[in-house]
Image 1 (cartoon, rainbow, N blue to C red):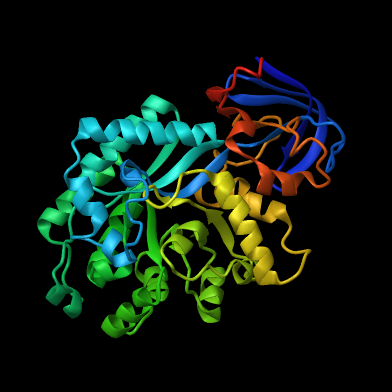
Image 2: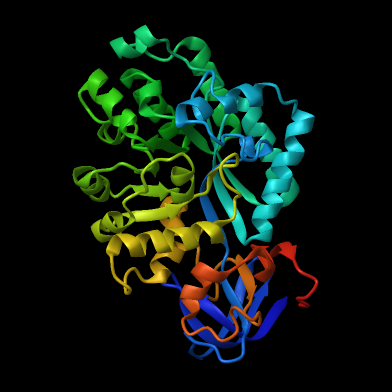
Length: 407
């Protein structure tokens, strides 16, 4: 059994901060939370407990090349077959690659992240490598595999009728034997027929589906020219994805379409900015009622530190609202915590209460920049550094624990 005494805990799916006489867990479950009073301000510091964070869009494979995409366009850095990422991954042996991924997962745990959803390149072998890194570190890797190559040539994509080639179908089945689901870079990489095949197979196997949409205007324009539908509309019609990543250049009609679909969008503002792309319409998506998650995207572009992403996203959203009031910082924090339940289900609630998984982060609010906070949720979202993280637990298992915290 573990226990923290006289702490502040962000409780329930709304993440309301409560002073608690004790916070207890046994095995993998929170067993007792003794609330005493709401606690949005502090006078002399406290231990603050928040739900473990989920990074909902990563590419851990290219974490081996930090800042390797500097000065490169989206196409030069990340498009197959000749983008920098794919050329470098092809030349990296497994024994060299695995330690990079393991170390980055450990850094994620060091910065409060307990789970991530990864768009994993390199076919079945890529998914197997990440699965091994997850086993080593205890970080929960939700693996969304990808084809190792481009299944169609330009003529077949233009005609937009061919099914998956037999070798691609076999690779898809092999990927899904290892991974938790499937991802592809854009809707423009496959034919309509192929997307329907993938939807049918993943649905039959109970696997997740994810796709990048509207990262730049070219995604929409190519899809329109080829099929008469934008990439978001096409994804919803043909592929029925659980996760739609980016929405960076979404216009008002596309924001409304996403919201009405009930699908979840994953925003990656720091990565978009690194590539000189527009920032996502956070305000419009929030006001439309879309379920939103956050990701740090490629390891080449960003460290996988969600606290940095929370800070940037909150301030970006405030700029888009154009006032000092909106949004509530807890609306941003929910993008890395309780909003995940809409995708992963009740076994992964992303929040804390007695009877729920003991998946949490302990923050040191005795630090000078935190100890007298006048708005605790805002301080969690904007002021936390790695040095303020004292422990990260996943279902009662410590993924990281600072020696300063004795339990």
